[in-house]
Length: 226
Image (cartoon, rainbow, N blue to C red; front, side, top):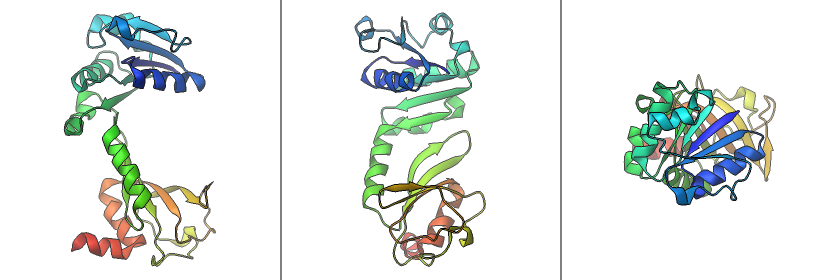
């Protein structure tokens, strides 16, 4: 897979290293000469250019990329890069970095962003996930599928503790994708009973989240109504 990353700062370089380790071809783009540091990621391609300009994206051969990641420290630049990549070069997938939470509402398909990544939101979600039992915590939003990755630590008073997974009446379009128990990751099996303290990860539409929370943790559902 060929990936172009706009923004060759610490974030962009870290993403590039991970992708290269996973066998992908990576191009790092930055308009600042001081950011062009091939010694930091020697296996990547490097381009000194402004990703907000069409000519730069043409030079980068963005049309040949499978993914464009807009990872600069400037939200306006990330939006423009995503929009140009999607509308002018038909890049299949764009990922936009959100630096300021107040701008997150802009990072949608209307601006060419398939997936937005908000560091403040992710960090707050991880804090909630670490301390919340019986509450549904949204970890990630999949823009293209209109669905979210959510987590719940099953409380001891859940009516489905001890119930085989296959017999739990999960809402329609709700998918239990994995289960964490005693430090181990499990692929859910229909005959496997749920236990108190299980960390359950679901992919679910936003409109079904409340129904799922009330199903597994009725007390949490009642708290939300109060």
